[in-house]
Image (cartoon, rainbow, N blue to C red):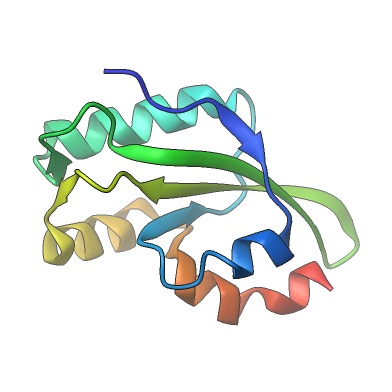
Length: 115
């Protein structure tokens, strides 16, 4: 199953996605395509998302200025329309994973990092 290529997105463009169902992984480094594939594969193997060609319809790199750091990389992952997602279990997985946020929460909680 092929996940989307990683594009780029600005915070303003991300704000336009408000209400979209997806995740933002904070501080993603290295090969972002590996992050996308790894997270999608983990969600499939734990039966948290599936029944679709790809778990995510969009993956994008978001670069911010956090506390003087000129470039924390955050990875935006928007779930595909056909993905069947176990939201309750995904919420627990997200907490266990660590620095990962729902898109809507990220927009509120990290807006200061992108001014």
